[in-house]
Every structure is written in C-alpha cells, then in structure tokens.
Image 1 (cartoon, protein in one colour):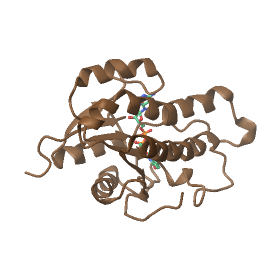
Image 2 (cartoon, protein in one colour):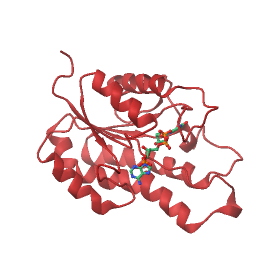
Image 3 (cartoon, rainbow, N blue to C red):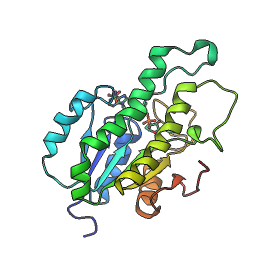
Image 4 (tube, helix red, strand yellow):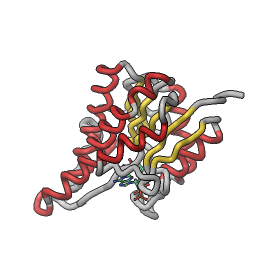
Length: 208
Ligand SMILES: NC(=O)c1ccc[n+]([C@@H]2O[C@H](COP(=O)([O-])OP(=O)(O)OC[C@H]3O[C@@H](n4cnc5c(N)ncnc54)[C@H](OP(=O)(O)O)[C@@H]3O)[C@@H](O)[C@H]2O)c1
C-alpha cells in the first residue's frame, strides 16, 4: 500500500485547514501527529518545541506541515501595534523556523519534506493591495524566505503553498474553498511540486 509507514507532523491540526490536511494525509497513508496547543505545542512559546520533539524520540519524520498561524491586526499603518506585529511574526515565522530546527534530526532520518502553509497575501509579486494587514502579509513573505533559506542550508525539500481562500475561522464564511477541497489540492502539490516552489492549492505557480 502506498505511503505505508510514513509519518507527518501537522501544526494547528485541531481546527480549520489543519484538521482537513491531517485527514487527507491519513487517507493517503501517513501516520499524522497532530501538533496542537492542546498537545503541548504552542508556536508562540519556543520552550515547548524540545519537549514536543522529545515525544518523537528518534522517529523518522517524512513531512512537517507548518499550518498554524494567526492573522493579527488587519487595519492600516495607524493601528499597527508593536505587540500584535511581534506576536504574528513569532507564531507565523520564528515558530516554524525553530520547530524545524528542533525536528531536524527526525527530518533527516525520514523523507524530510517541509511545507510552509503560506499565502498569496505574502507574495511580493502578487500580494500587493491597499488594505492594511501589515503583520500577516509581512509574516508570510518572511515565511517564504525562511523556507528557501532552510532548503538552501539544510538540503531539505521545502515548499511554500497557498491554500486558497478557505472556509475556516480565518477565511470566514464568504470564502470559496471548503477545507477538504483545499487539503486535497495541497496534498497533490506536496506529492508533485519540486522543492523551492511557491504554489497554490490548485497547482498554479505563484510569483515570489
Ligand atoms: N483561511 C484562509 O483563507 C487562508 C488563506 C491563505 C492562507 N491561509 C493559511 O492557512 C493556514 C491555516 O489557516 P486556517 O484558515 O485554518 O486558520 P484558523 O482557522 O484561524 O486556524 C488557525 C490554526 O492555527 C493554530 N494556532 C494559532 N496560534 C497558535 C499557536 N500559538 N500555537 C499553536 N497553534 C496555533 C490554531 O490552533 P488553536 O485552535 O489552538 O487556536 C488553529 O489550529 C494558516 O497558515 C493560514 O495563514 C489561510
């Protein structure tokens, strides 16, 4: 059976897109470890990463999906707050980087694919708008660079993927892509996109 024995870690797998992603990966044959705050992993608290990694021991890790994220203030320059901006960068960028480092030995022992759930909103080429949303957009642009840096330094396979406008708490009820549909599309990209790609869930390449 395809996929037998593969292990994936998915952050933010307690609700939203993370639940659908974990389910799609399970159906594809992965054993999925749901990295949630309830399970002790808080992306805003790097001190929780080593204890989380310890629960894996020497287990090879084939896929690490950095899905958890927060939006932060969506207003413009006038409403920008130090604490809010720092919180978004901490959860959306620094957390994934440090969690990857904490799991590096496991990744190297397995297929070692790292997936950044990014956003077209973080694309310098396609994500510009006159809305506010400074923290979130900057965080996803930084996450994209973090992914490329990781690929260059570690040799791991790293993708940045845009899930579409997804019907979750973050996406809201107006969103046009059900989480299960996005997750299926993301899984297809995880299987086929070459390392260093920035792609949408439907297979369309996104300009950095
Ligand atoms: N929805 C969209 O339209 C859309 C569009 C583009 C990109 N994305 C990206 O897709 C991913 C999933 O988004 P979503 O729509 O599912 O968002 P969501 O519904 O707001 O869910 C966010 C997830 O992140 C987790 N999380 C937040 N802060 C955390 C922390 N400090 N530590 C650990 N987990 C934390 C949440 O866990 P708790 O339950 O513990 O809070 C939750 O599981 C994100 O990276 C988002 O930026 C979404």
